[in-house]
Image (cartoon, rainbow, N blue to C red; front, side):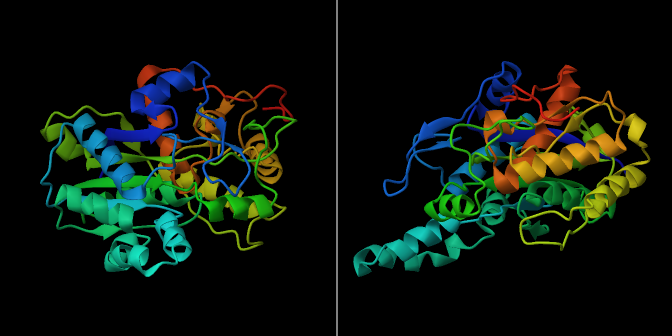
Length: 344
């Protein structure tokens, strides 16, 4: 059963779907030097508003935009939901632990169920008024891609005819910043994917969801189609908590798995939207994998120099940008790249 994309909702530091796409093509970046938390020093961050976003309201707006784009409206009782988040409602829990007075704790404790990690999926399900399957994957930076893969499978197996799939991240919190800083992974001036002078990642917030439908359902209602999901590859690298295995074998297996399931060969690929985090390890390993597997002339870019690293949502944003590249027949640039280190 063919699975097609009939709608996209996206918000990044550059704006909504079309604003982000136009800004990206113009080479603009949503990254600015800011200090959202007074005890912590200023950092380059990709904020949507002057203050960090709230997960639920951000999710609601992204899903509403996707429904409008797909010419759909609630209630959608049979629509599946696969909306993940790597950090979930971590910001609410950090606030809960930092508020010591009983008066300030009471309202938070009263609504503690609203702060669980699956809040984005629940907010989506409520907005749709669905009675179908609701899933909330959480898999670090792979969350968005995994969500789309799960949505694809729900339609392929006949469990749903339509699914809202993607990820949303409100990841700019004191704990997240301190954690990545302790790892030595944060940049001090900006995000420069695959650059010889790259410094590390820049945290961003935002998200993207796709409206997935069976081709039959989409055709029956005359929906516009951005593209088709052919397949996916998922593997787990248990080598280290935060570093990939040096032989890259598991990453290579994921790519090969995806191509085999999709009925494609390496030469069929005409663009690679890279993870491109601007960290030393990721970019080196990813560049090696691409150079080893794909033809030398395949175009490669990372969009994190424009949107920042949206952690769990980054794969969903990448999928959305790829669909717009197909629609407009133009490839997004690698914003922030000045002096390439790798022969890509």
